[in-house]
Image (tube, one colour):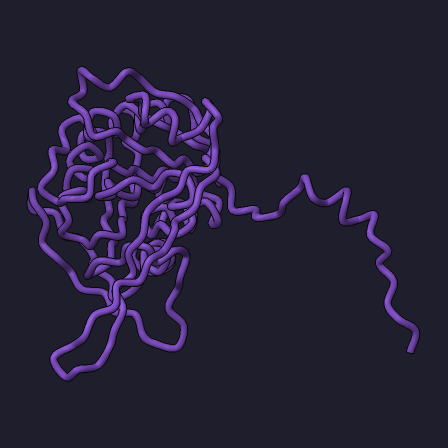
Length: 260
């Protein structure tokens, strides 16, 4: 009998979020699972890690009698401590999500969900981050589970390579209305921040970060375009932040230091 794959599962919405429960349900059909996730919501933490403070691990009972590991840190912390402490052998595939809310375009930079996946890629492990384009935790996960299972099966059979990371965004539609899957690039866009000024009971001002997303990309090969058309978007991601297209021009600058 072939050895079942072993998945490391994490997220940024917290170990008891409905999204990670949905992903765990799918993963347990396909292999063995280890869950190491934040003990509280860590959305938009990016790739932050905890330095100068201890990380604590708490065992948590999950559905199906599984024992998960809740960590008092960020999503990236969770993957680091999972592979360095919790797990005795390296996972075959890291799965992060299913996030409550899209992580397309520039949101991929801020995303804690994708930071967990990217941390795995940094360690030379294949990883996939899943996001559902719907924020409320009460949302229907049935279509997202079907998509996640399909993508995971392809990653296993087609051999997602060590260090490869996929960003999967799923439109919030019934499965029969999702048109298919597209391989995409990250759309250019930005968040236009607004700060809602409020006053606490003591009369002191504070600010609540709000804003809206501005799409700056008219391409038809982007994650945003695919989602708008009703397709699942899969974007391969890299942790190399070098702007390679800028290297030739910058090399031509007169790089001479002034004489002393």
